[in-house]
Length: 284
Image 1 (cartoon, rainbow, N blue to C red):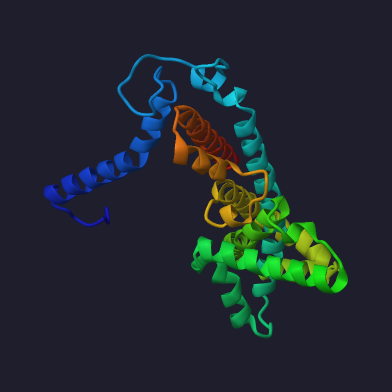
Image 2: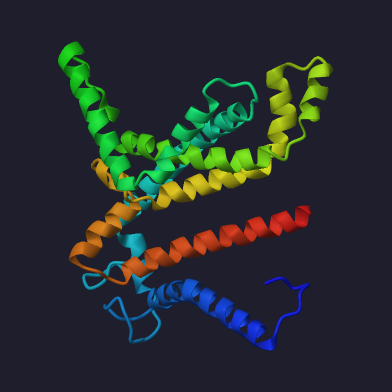
């Protein structure tokens, strides 16, 4: 809709109805989860039976809340730890890749850039299976020929980190690379003319310019890792992440505790987005 052009009343009305329905479609499931997380009923759905905090704090024979469920809290901690390592590694490698692909003279640049984007177009299930088979074959080969037992080549925490890192770095590379395209290269040239080394010019000139994109890319990589399921389920060891744990629970039985977990995740993301928006406006 171009506001500078004249539009008929019917067009404006239809446009507003469409926008309203679109946001209702996006927000309604989140509101339903928020309501059912406080519903005093053992059923995961409506009707409403009253307000309660049991699904967060209860610890009785009839009800076990989120914070009293040690297994569920352990899976949340595992997801947070996994996401932190994945986001950190992805940010470091993604920044390096973005800087590298912005170089004009770079052999095989097109081919390597295509390979870097491959994890985004390959289905997560295929990616997880391929990483599992590759790591298993590598571990078997090392053990058979050299007598070495490499723990992270078997389904484990570090294999999950490796699997999620394979596509997390690509997201960081794209986000940082988009910001880097707006960078004025003459600033680096000025730093080099003042006897700064290449590394110093990147650290003191380029990185400060990229800081908003780096922070945003780290958050995106963290959230993608935290919520990943398709790749993780093939690489997980004895300590499941939150999505895998929720999937295993909902296959056999479902309680409003799942709504409580979902509500906390949505609340955390919403608060983080509002804080980020507030600081960005203040900075501007």
